[in-house]
Length: 275
Length: 263
Image (cartoon, rainbow over all chains, first blue to last red; front, side):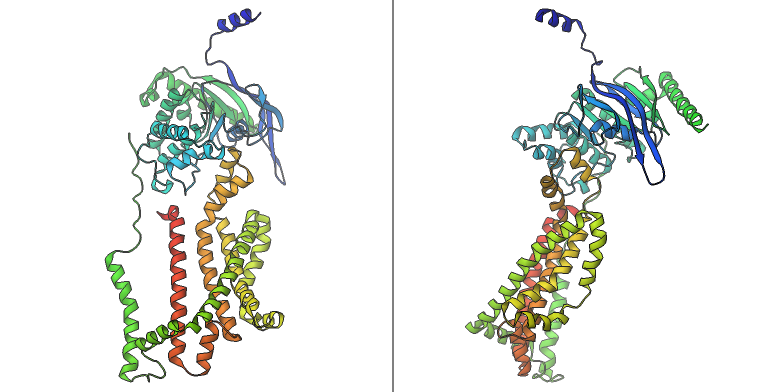
């Protein structure tokens, strides 16, 4: 019996198809005095272990709401979100990290102390975590800035610190809410490519919210296109561009085709929604 | 690796030139204080020269009887201060924690800041007599509202989004207080405490001048009624030096804990 099971498991190839987070028929509405806004309507989605998944859509399509749901900050009103087959009941900082658009660093802590903060909360600030933090600071390209305060860093550098902090607990999943949205165009593209390198080196699953179609195509394995009012999942697109990718991929025929396809998809759903 | 240029760190504090000119701005009035009575423009019984006043201050400091006055005042100030700081910091924290509570109570506390506390002095004497307790109570009354208001303002210093961040880290209430609120408000609180110290001293000295048997305030008032301007100014000098030292120390500490705000 055991041998049989082992044989069966061996037969299954360990690809990136294993589901790490499952979103099951999630509906989320926000009520104000006058009206109810359906931020998410019956959204289902399997996030595969190790993949880079982007959530794309215009403002109000519920992508940030979905990300908050995945982080455990927001519990779904209907349906449920499962992390490794267990429903999420709240934030799981050791398994799921969340990166915000603004870096949200502690201004009174140095770079290294910001990166170490999650381990301090868990009472696990050891010599080992310190050397891990130094590795992460090197990974995000900030070696030499360990003892600087956030106000001495540029926007892009702050966001690098935030990413290093997000990785300190070795989470399986990193959720990113428009992490480069506040950066200028050039820094944004450079940070995206750096993120790909970090993602490849750590093997972390990334769920990336953006309203930039180009950014989504450049980075992702799959793109979940979302449409507003009510927030729905319109389409899941596999991006079949070779890796490693660089900025030149933007001009490839496949990239251009995908960009047009996603744009059409969004335009169509918007005009459809107005009927 | 390409970076955007990090912001150039701002330079603070003084160069040698600013230090020299600052000393000049202190020395010039003192020199005038010395010269004017000696030239006879102002009679030296009305304004004794600085050197005479300094000598008198030294004499007072050398007199063992003076220590009773100094220690009385400093003890009153210290006790009032030890009551004010936790009282104001805790109430400011509780008021500032919740925006609804803050919207109701903050205007009320600010209203009390605007009321001159000296009008309550006769009332305090009737209630508490002329002794130690009344001085401390008046010191507390002078300072507690202004420090509370500062603390409430400090609670707004919590950088945006950090509360949500600590929530993603499952921080407990205590961890939030220790890692988020405490460091964020400390520079503001130290500034409030520095203000509080000034107000507490004012309160204690005022109460002593008004009616007291001991203390530096009483000494000033006593010299005044005897028209002993030299001794009066000598005590004023002593009080000024003591408060400047306390003030400078607190300000230096405030700059140290607030380094992260400016660099």
